[in-house]
Picture (cartoon, one colour):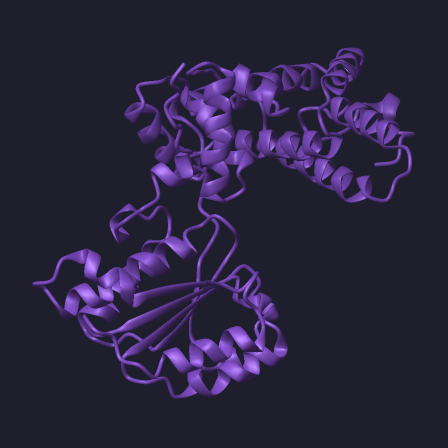
Amino acid sequence: MNMETFIVSALKYRPTTFEEVVGQQSITQTLQNSLETDQLAQALLFCGPRGVGKTSCARILAKLINRSSQQNLPEEDFAFNIFELDAASNNSVEDIRKINEQVRIPPQVGSHKIYIIDEAHMLSNAAFNAFLKTLEEPPKHVIFILATTEKNKIIPTVLSRCQVYDFKRISVSDIQQYLVKIAQDRKLNFEESALFLIAQKAEGALRDALSIFDRMVSFTQGNLTAKAVADNLNLLDHQTYAELGHLIFNHDVTGILTAYDELLKRGIDPLHFIQGLGDFFRHLILAKDPKTLALMELGEDVKKVFQQETQPLSSDYLMEAIALINSFEIKYKSVTNKRVHVELSLMQLASLHFNGEKKKDTSSHPS
C-alpha cells in the first residue's frame, strides 16, 4: 500500500509572511516598519516561550531584508544569504570563530547576509565572549537574529548590543480561531468548544496546539467533539463543570464527593481540577455583565450557557466561592493527604449559601 507522506500541521501551516504570523501583531508591525524606514538594527534578539513564532519570524524577516533591496532577483537566490545555526549543538568557541571569519566576506547577491542563531542561550560563555566584538561592530552587510526561550541566560554584554523583541504567549482565542481555519481548510467536523479545549491545553504555544490538534484529528477520525477531546486530553469539558456546579449550588455534599471520585477514576489531575473549578466560577462572574463577557475566551454558544447559569447567583456568593477555591489551591501544595484536602474543600464549597454565608452545620470546619 502506497502511503502518502503526512505533513504535520506545525510544518504545513508554518507562516511564510508576517500577515500569517498568529498573535504577535505588535512585533511583526514593528519589524515591517523598521524595514520600510531602513532602521533595522544589526543585531536582534527574539525571546519568548516555545512555539510562539520566534524562528518563523526570523526566517520571514531574513527573506524580506534582501527582497526589499533587490526587486528584480528571484527569491531562491537569497537563500544562500541566510545562515541558520542551532546553538544547542553548535555552541563552542570554534563554531563562533567560523562565523566571525565568514561575516567578513560580503554577499554575492543581495545586500545582506543574515545569521539566525537559534537557542542562543546555549552558547558557552567563551563562545559568547568570542562573539561580542563581531556583535558590537558587525560589517555593514551582516544582520544577526538571535532567538531564545531563556533571555535570563543571555549575558548582559550581549543583551545590551541587541535590539530585544519579547514574543508573548498566544491567547487562547487567537489559537482557537487559527484551529478553526485549519479545520475548515481540511473539511473536518468540529465543535468550537473542542478546539477551545485544545487551545487551552497548549498554554500559549501555537506549535503545541497544532501537535495536539493532529493527535485529536486522528483519535476522533476527523470528528472533533468537545467530549472526545476532553476525554482524550484528560481534561474536563464545560459540561462536566456545569454538572459539578449544580451539585455545589444545591449544597449536595454526597453528590459532589461521588462525582469527584468518578473523576479521579478517569485519571484527572486534582490540581488541574481545582484550577478548572476556579475558572468555572470566574466565568460565572464575567458572564454577569456584557462588558466583562468580552473577557471570556470561549465560544459564543458556551458564553450564552454561562449567562443563563449565572442569573440566580449573586456576585457576592461567586466571589466568596472564588476566594475559597483560591485558598484551596494555595494549601494544596503543602498538604500531605491531597485527596482528603480536595474532598474537604468541595464540602466547604457546597456548604456556602448564596449570600456568601456558610451553613451553620459546617461552621466547625476550618475555612
